[in-house]
Length: 87
Ligand code: SF4
Ligand code: SF4
Image 1: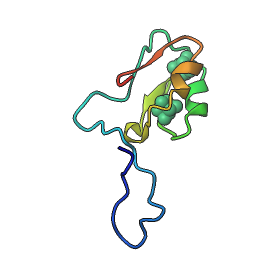
Image 2: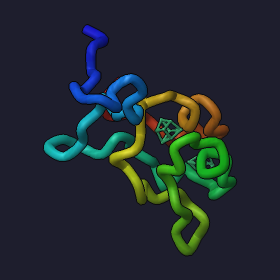
Image 3: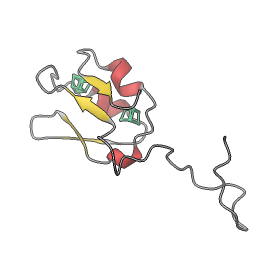
């Protein structure tokens, strides 16, 4: 179940690949912009730099494909504005 290693001479340490593929599904997260107060906590804490702030400072999923559903953003959002579409 955990074997995701490609074959090849440099396969000993493959680049970490996101097990989530969002190309045919919804984006990784739903963000309730009415609840979001643009505190930027999610933007600052995301280890994958998924977010960019919009002109109001609210998070846009600019690199949605990199989201690995780590939970950090939604557990730290003080306004409970973020929910996962996959968990
Ligand atoms: S942590 Fe929550 S309230 Fe703060 S910017 Fe992100 S979504 Fe908005
Ligand atoms: S779940 Fe993790 S990787 Fe995805 S946007 Fe939130 S903090 Fe970033």
